[in-house]
Image (cartoon, rainbow, N blue to C red; front, top):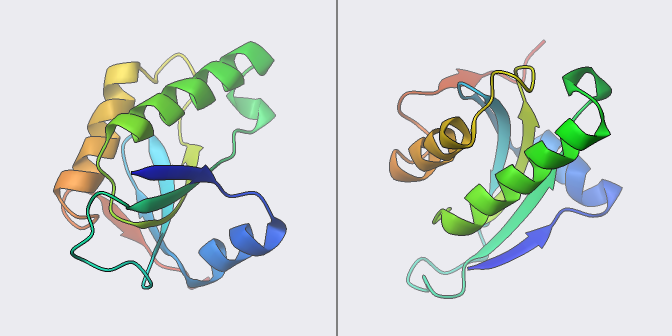
Length: 123
């Protein structure tokens, strides 16, 4: 799996404009499928990840700890090819490494459809 970061504003805008929003226990997730990736190539899956953590979450140490933990969980998970944007839903005291791992595993194993609340893009 090739893991890269969402870097430019255009990449973030594309994910937000065309992606599907999901709410897990600890994370808000926006997922945009990678239609250019062949389904039979599992070894060369491209996953792009963007992470945003507001100051409301905690101080810089806590925000960076969350980012490091989330990146580590994503590296170990077998996510489908595509672009992902993650943001935390709860304060830092409530989020554990095991909780993050469970949320990401549920995304992968259940295919972004079961056990998570889909959020519509309509306002």
